[in-house]
Image (tube, rainbow, N blue to C red):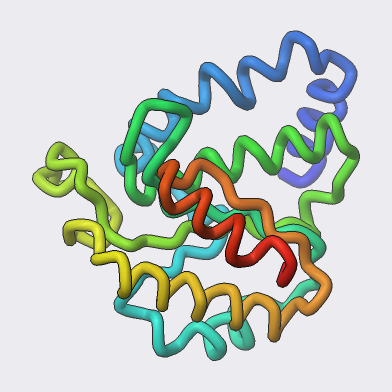
Length: 184
């Protein structure tokens, strides 16, 4: 399997113009929307709000490799198509592919992270196949505290990591960027 993946990576690098629309926009939008139906194995780290008091332990026990880059989303503002909850993980995976193909970044040193803070997408909340936390998005104070806990745990485990905020809703994106831009 490793040989197949490595071969696919080489083909993608040699044909980046043709492959980019397949590994990212517009194809990734469909993958995000079908995430719960096509999930076959974890591709990153999923942290839900109910886990908030265990983030340090999760980082210590689940993450054993060196990480240079964390691509994190809360799935609220995915590609202009809205709130897709945990389906946002696929946007982190797509961005990881772009970093690897275009920037030469080793994918083993990148950690995609989905922060599951609930969703306001009624379609997802009512879908029996939805894999995320079935809860409306948490309130602003809970959200801010959870983001603080996440950043603190990530910084403790990986002090020199670069944190890439991906497809957060506009208000939260701006707030997070302003609050943490000098910290990570």
